[in-house]
Length: 171
Image 1 (cartoon, helix red, strand yellow):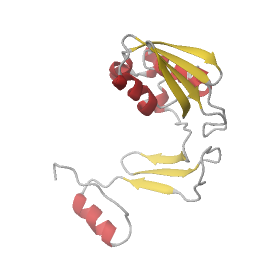
Image 2 (cartoon, one colour):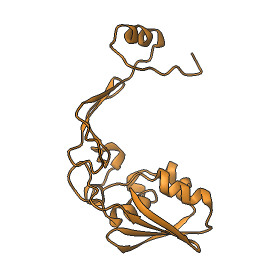
Image 3 (spheres, helix red, strand yellow):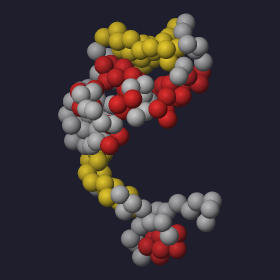
Image 4 (cartoon, one colour):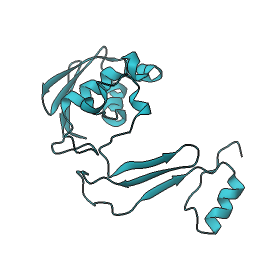
């Protein structure tokens, strides 16, 4: 979601891609990026287990609606890479006022698909995001099924009921 970035001293200056919208139609801004980092350190949002990932970010600063400055305690390639490749942006407007974790609410995203339905331990359905900012508009649904028994999963693949299954090392 970064259009460009520049490292200067202990700072990473990120220019955000314009025209990006969350799956609810809201525009993504620098304020959302700042809120996302801060949410990991706010107990309301239950981000404690991920705090270590962002421990080297000392603060974030908003330069304008599409520019965020990350200040680091100690600048490193890994810290810059982590921000640019791992940070998943949250909508401040959708989540800031809540008293519960954003992880337990309807999930908003900026990708080509949005969450349609989630059935715990069964399946997750995604549908095209009408606000997708990128190229190649998806026109199909995606269903991810949870199949605990690898033999059953193998039979489902053979019958055409499942496109893929992952076998863990414990099998």
